[in-house]
Amino acid sequence: MKRDYAKHQAELLEEMERIRAAAARAQERQGPRGAVVLRAGPTFTVVNSESGPSIKCHRCGLVSSNWNDIDKLYCGNCHRFHKEVS
Image 1 (cartoon, rainbow, N blue to C red):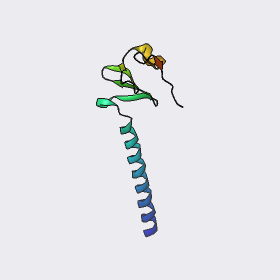
Image 2: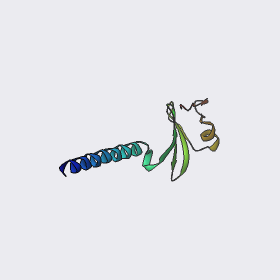
Image 3: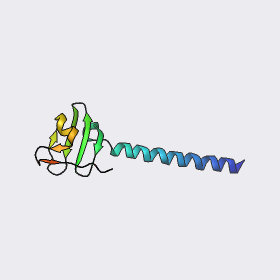
Image 4: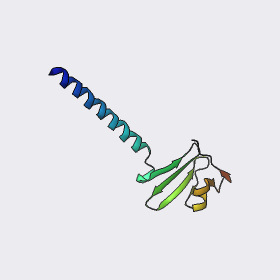
């Protein structure tokens, strides 16, 4: 009986750790003011917030809500296209 309890307790602890890790990953994906990160790369982040989707360039800091910039992963300030790493 004790072995079953110990095994069950170990399984519960493992499940709790998986839940904590998933919650930490979800929290990392939160953008500014609770915005949800839709896409991200080494040089950009696309977020969806209450004001709508936007792309932020990590090179210059520009944030654009232009649909073409978001679709093409383009920074109008740097005049460069971002690359999405898969």
